[in-house]
Each structure stands twice: as structure tokens, then as C-alpha cells.
Amino acid sequence: MKKKGGVTLTREELERFIYEKYNVRADYPFEDDLETGVFRHGDTGRWFALTMHISARKIGRDSDEKIDVTNLKCAPEIIESMAGIESGVYRAYHMNKMHWLTVALDGTCDDGLIEWLIDISYDLTNKKKK
Image 1: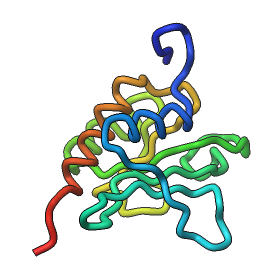
Image 2: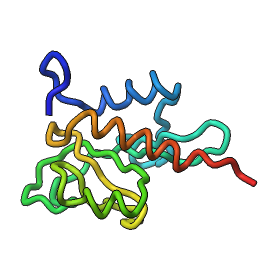
Image 3: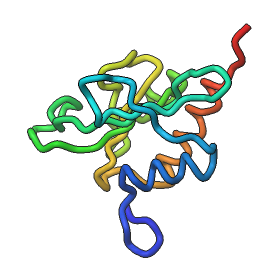
């Protein structure tokens, strides 16, 4: 996966995309973990993205290399059609695998696909509290 100019989508670029499009920055709510960032809707506090630095083995790869990933909410039918099929897209690590997926931010997933999945996650989690 390459962005225009030959740069792969990194965690920093994902954070920039989310800020520029949705005016949201990650917060770091876990006292003992300053690497896991949560992106939330300002009005409801609902999560729409989570970024982590994890062992690649945790998403099913045969490596202990640490990689950046993001978890995004998605419709179950999209998860079924992508997880394990699209390069860099997996069933969610550490979240409900029926409603969330994990995307590797190591150059294996197309940046346009990641941006599309962020938009889906943002929309799915943007329901107002009743």
C-alpha cells in the first residue's frame, strides 16, 4: 500500500486523517498504557477507533514484531467479507469480533480502504444517546 508520494499510511497519518476530517484527537484513558489511543465522538463519548501497538502474533501473524493497528466498528457482513481476505484486515483484536475489525498500519492495507473503514466506523457509532 502506498499513498501518493510513496509514503505508507502510518499511525500518525491515520491520526492526522481523523483530526482533519472529524476534528477528533486520540485520548489515552488507560493509566498503565500510554500507547493505546481512543478516538471518540465529542457529544456522546462513543468510541469509533482505537489505536494500539501490539505483537503481530495477536492478530494471527507468525511474528512477535510490534506493529501499530487500529480497531474500527463495522457491519458484520463487511467484516465477514474482509477479515482474513483483504491484506492487513483481521477480526478484531481485544474487541467484539462480530462488530469490530483490526487493520494493520504497517503498509499491508490500502490507505483508501482504511479511510473508508474509518468513515464507516464513525457513522456507525455516531448515534445520539436517547
